Image (tube, rainbow, N blue to C red):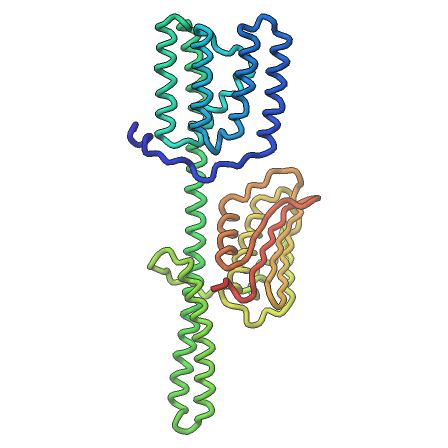
Length: 371
């Protein structure tokens, strides 16, 4: 177990510094100064205030550099205790510095966590042995420290589990898209085979008809090549399941329903000559959005599905009129939708409406993903 902890890498993409970090400094620094002013009984009052104020800025780098910040805090505090004969900084704001061991356990690597905790335990034992710290105080401090570390470890495990679920959702969506593309490529290849057979049959007597067949084969081959290039980008497994023919935008009318919540479908614009991957993706995105609305929209009475196409893109908008103010958790279905749109060179966003309900908006390029 210790070996696996030692080899644990740092979690990827720690959060960047936000305004709340500066607000924390804006609260803690004045609090330390005021405490030094109004607590004349504070041991080593001036030195305590200076040391704590100097340590508080380390909180700004607690996520990006958790181990160095923890070492700075540990070293400065230990130096203070040596200089004062075992007395620790007694400012109440030292509680805020518990964010440093929390961040070490949350964002540090396994070896950084082991080394950091390995420094604390001997230092605490030595302080007790030298009589600088009472046993009760030492045990209480260790309990608080390990409670903080345990909380950080729980959040770390939860984040890792969620990341695995997100990766799985993305992988499943890529597999679905790959299967859809496989069907469309098979359609193009079948069309080329039929046209080739017809061209060969007509070549002895109708050269023009044979030439037309060659032109059709050329166009189908170009489309199939584009689809294959897209499929290579998303394919993650070698085996593809046999599926029914891909649904298209024209099939969205099947989603319309008069039952509550009713579904109203409107399609506008030129939808001719859309790549099959885009045609199918719009349907899949709309279908998933309607399913999410029916499942999560509390007291919704109406769902609108709008598809509009122009010369460059196809836009999808699915909105409902569910209760406002209720937290809507889209789950991993939205992750798959975003992944599908991204793989095809488009975007997919979801969020609450200003008044009531929830809206999903997707924009896909008319020509498919750039190669």
